[in-house]
Length: 180
Image 1 (spheres, rainbow, N blue to C red):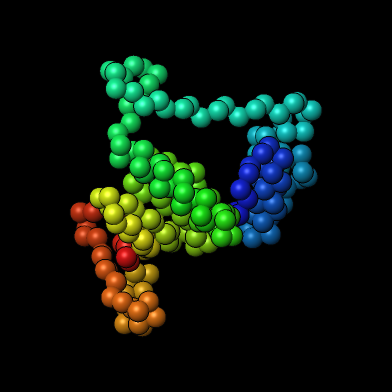
Image 2: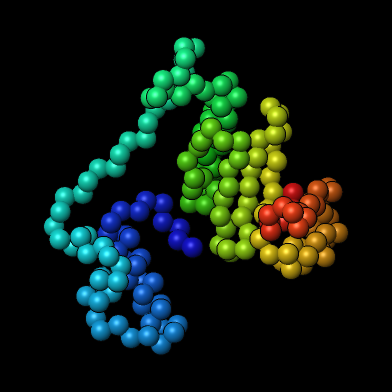
């Protein structure tokens, strides 16, 4: 997982070359040269001298009481409260040195905020439930990892200082399990 916050063309190129060099080492595959790597990455334009194209700005939503048009999205009070909460949440995390990990995602109107961790088998989630509850949990993608965590339930809850909700999804649900 990369901890890079801002991906420009140069960083993407460097990361791609780094990954291809890892492939060479890991699977004993040899590329002819860096030119072949650039061809594989399909981003040779990075070195062709073009000026950077500015990013397209995100659309702004207007709060209206009229009927919505094709270009205007009507936002409910709940959407606006969510955006306000996540905006303050992200700013708080950045102010407390967590801009690289927890505050790596932009605020949104959603009722959830997922954060990847350095392991692809888990992610942390934050969820607004109704108006006054913030649920924080860990999604565990592999049942055997969830079982391993669950086997340490007493120890984990002891360190936390209170009982936690443990939920394991059924076969009809997705393969995700979660620890709350």
